[in-house]
Structure formats: C-alpha cells, structure tokens
Length: 351
Image 1 (cartoon, one colour):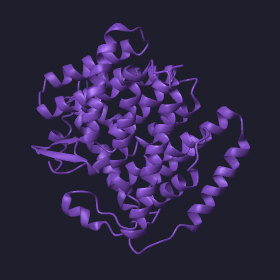
Image 2 (cartoon, helix red, strand yellow):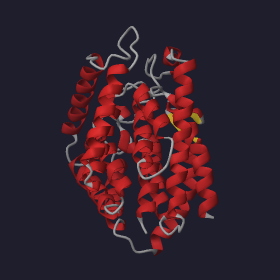
Image 3 (spheres, rainbow, N blue to C red):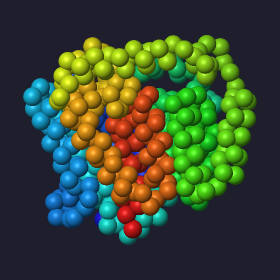
C-alpha cells in the first residue's frame, strides 16, 4: 500500500498550485492536500500504536496550537491545523516502509519535473505579471514553475539539489532552474545547505567548487529591466521588515497563546483573496504571533525532535537547515510541499 501511495504523491507533487480549488471565504484546498490527507489519516492511526520519540513533542505542540485556536475560533484556522497534522502524519505512514530509496528517488524525480516545467515557463512565458490579476505577486522574468512564486519554487529546487548530491542525476537542470528564480532567500538556503553537506562530509573541496560555481553563475545571470531580476532590490527587503514588525506587534498583544493558529489573516489586515494571507514572511514569527511564546516553545520542541530523529541522514540535515534559513524570509515551514519533503525525508531516514 505504501508504494502505491508514494507513487500517487510523486505524481501529484509537481503540479503544485495548478491543482487548487478555491472554496470561498478564504478556504483553498490543493489536490496535494487531499492526497496527503488520506495518508495522514492512516498515519495518525499508526501514531496511536507505535513508539516514537516524536510523539510527545507533536502532542504537546498540537494541544497548544489547538487551545490557542479554541480561545479564538475560526474555521479557517482549524483547517490549517488539520492540514499541518495531516502532513506530519506522512512520517508515521511511511516510517516502517522498507523501500527508503524509493522515497528518496521519487522525491528527486518529482522535483526534477518541477525544474523542467519551470525552465519551460522561464523560456516561453517569462512575463508572468498577468498573474497579479489572480492575487499572485507581480513577477516577471523569473522562474515560478508550478508554484507560481519564485521564493517557494526556489526552496523546493534547493531541496532537489541537496537530495541530488546523494547520488541522483539532474543536478544541472535543477541548479539552473533554482538560479533562474532570482530568489535571494533560496540562494542563501542553498549556500547553507551546501555548507552543511561539505561540513558533514568533511569535504571543503566540494564547498569551494560549489561556491565558485555559484558566484560565477550569479555574475552571468541575465538581467531584465525593472526590479525583478535585480538582486540588490530594496523594496522587497523593506516590505519584509515591515511584515516582520507587524507580526511582532500582533504577538505583543497576545504574548502567551497568540491569536490562534491559522488566524493570522484576521489580525494582519491581509486581503482575504491573497495567497500569502496565512502567515507572516517568517515562519517563526508566524508561530509566535498565532500561538504565542508557549506555542513557539512547543514548535521548537517538534523541530528539535525532528533533528534528533534525522541526525544520521545527511540529506535531511542539509535540507532541514536550508528550509529553516529560508523560513526567516518566507512562511516555508508551513508551505505544504516543504512540509511534505521534510516528513517524507525524515521517514526515509528511519532505517
């Protein structure tokens, strides 16, 4: 059953935001969510009867998040919490799956598909400003792929590169796609991930070569008119600073339990049609604002537990660090496809 389920996951993964259903009232469901939801339900059943070091921190975090939401209930917030639990359930669904390499290679192929589609979009549909009419950010001459966002496309491609260092091909295609996203957060995440791989492999030659190729690539990147491809752009930086300050302001009014998990949009003044309404441009600040200091402690406990469980897997450790760094500039820790990669790779780490 697990192998068939994994195949379905890997077939749906590359479609990204293209298979999404807007149900109204700010509620959106992706095909990926529906597929993961079924597996997550089975995973939760297995969660009840197996012994695992992650069980306690997961229960603590979900109880805190649920209590914070109960104090200020919104249906949308409940759906966000259910989705998070479902993605975490992937770990327990695949925890005892014997074909670990199948999971690793399947994820790589799915991300390679994202890279190929993204390069096609960049070459044949570089001007994507028309997406602004559908409440996506206004970008042009940047790779968005099926995620319709260069930042999130970038981190998924970074994860593909790091996974490819474990022995799978397609590195050149995935690397080229990642660079065409012009996402500074993704570039930083890539450098952190490469540094981690080099450190744990004790191979500074790999680090030096990777950094030299990166610097050379950046210098050769094509430039277009406007801010999109300008890596020194300041507007997006100051917009993020303002966004971070807003999250801190929301937290300060509810410092212990926050405003309720998944309720960020109701306090930030975000447009209900916006695709970035669910959280701030920092996952940690999103946790702090929505579940307070108590929730942040609980969530850090989950992250610590994940790190401990995956400490023997180089790909997981490098990807975990890359996602964590990226999450300071985007709400990456709660992005469905990033969560999927984390939980599946963690399951594949469990020999």
